[in-house]
Length: 339
Image (cartoon, rainbow, N blue to C red; front, side):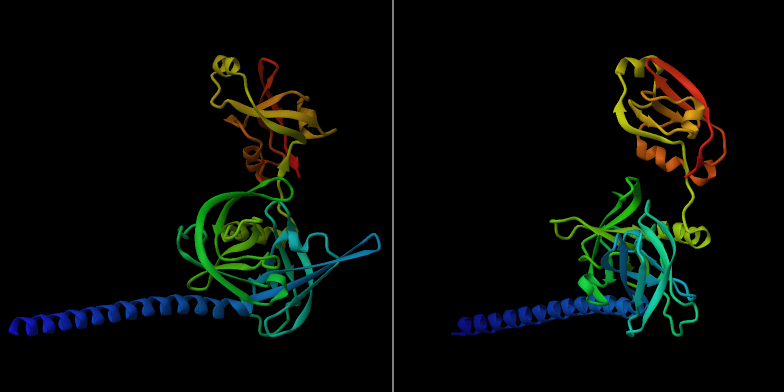
């Protein structure tokens, strides 16, 4: 009888201990969920007043097309950052603020190569809320991110997720690669384009730009560091100045015998398919069928890498261009022009 009583008491004590342990775990889970909710709601409350809905009208050939997207106010004098594909080639841009005010906006600058654009509403508009810009170099895979925008016209919609990957590349509508793209699973839909991707403390770390259909949870944002490089140039010049040499080309492998003979550092080059008339390439003596393998004394194996080195600083500066012409290695002097 004593043993049975002891076993009953011990079992009850064990169950009571398990109950308290379960309660402690549940409390910790509640605390974690509460912290997550506070982070998302806090960031959303901080940034949402700066997020705008953008409606556009494009009138061409007596036809009218309408579209919409998102953007965010990043300067107190009415400058708004968005995607180029939202406002490119439009006739009318209207911005709606969170408080319901609807304002006409003007296109300040547009860079389709990075899919970024700056528009502006009246600088004297009162009570404009401005975002804080973060540093996309400091983000890490797995960290919490919040996307804010206007999917399908539902104004100021908030979604949350994590940074899925960093350092992605994404091809713009012009064919150039955009570097340092952020991949996230924070849900994006048509209308989110141009809206901010935000970290837990309410700093904008990216500009939401694209989704992959029909995949789910694979969304992309342009790093805010790219945007802070592009935006001042758009405000100053209306575009980002780049250089060009006037060729059309594609990546091709180079025959291994030629690679070994010239001890080339790369086994690929850029085959010239076309040369524009009166272009820097034509003036330098480049012809169809040449293969570019170097620029400014450095190897060039891919056309995307070539695009990256054709910066504004190259305009008007004589530079060496190394090519293969049939089996001969030739160096030409070329002066890139402004794009």
